[in-house]
Image (cartoon, rainbow, N blue to C red; front, top):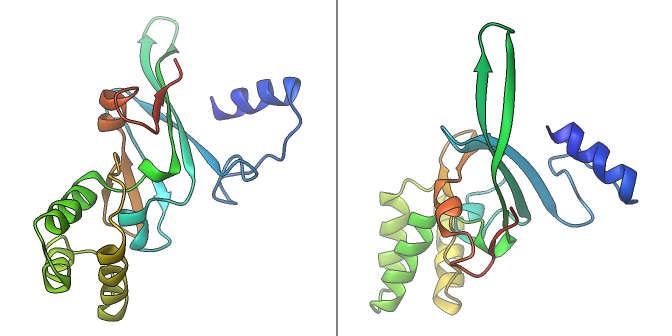
Length: 176
């Protein structure tokens, strides 16, 4: 599907194409394309820094969500695109992490509260970086992210929330 979409764009537009190996599909636009099933709307993403879980991935996402039906007789499948969602980069952080941070700060939490929260969430960060992040957060509250990001050697991005919140939250747009 990604290759077909890229081919369509090349017929109509001139742009620099990225790749999975480069980490982003549209590097000039800072947009990555994800294609996922409605049955389990998720994909993987390279882990760069624990900061991504709080401040976002650093690029926007164009998410195509499909429903697949198989024809057993002809041994073929058909993909039906049921959602196309654009997630602005400022909304690509983890929902539970950013919501928790915002609640702590709004409840007059301090650096120790944030550090304890990072520990409870098992944020993959060392003590020095955790302190830096806490200091930043006390100066500027982060935007709420709308992805679910699981800790692993690669981030596991889950999209159910962005599907549900498209057009209800600024920065999450239902394209189709």
